[in-house]
Length: 231
Image (cartoon, rainbow, N blue to C red; front, side):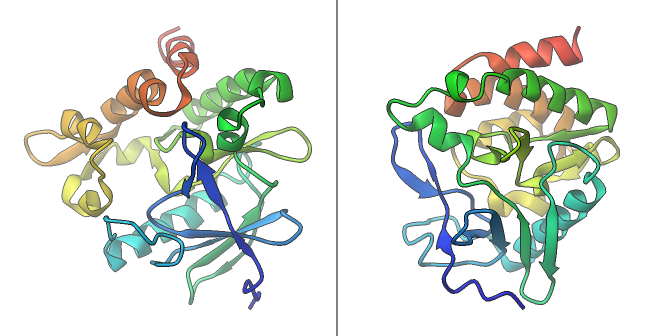
């Protein structure tokens, strides 16, 4: 078992430049060399001291298993981080990492994503082309869900948010415990009268509206959606 006691927490940057826990499901720790992330699926009050949403334990476990599943099944894609190890007993996933996510680049004063990574838009489009070719949506697409590898390759974490086309409809009550107020409207507009979320509709709302308004602050994703899905 890898000892991560001297590994540091990773925090995303919010658009206002303040550090904040990156997600509700796992505690991300990074090794001293900043080359490996441990996604520890647990409730860590030190990492989230002000968190008001406490995700139920069974839901944390459900998402842990999905993250492992899709890191494995999608390992052939250039955008999937290398999966180094999984500690199933303690729900820890060890994967490829490189210092920071795109939230640090976007929201640190004086930094410029286009200048530092000129091909990021093309790589992002290629990512969506690959998701379509492999019959899945990925619905967690914030800047803190992406990093650039040492080789300059765009990579995406939080693969618990992969939805294969054959799982298009998921009963809302299964994941109700992770729905926060900021993004609740996406679930409300995508839930049918039987209580099932239509993730095709959810994905379209996310990529054409939510990302522009809540995180990236540009129309890149809406443009990519039009090219890849409606072109």
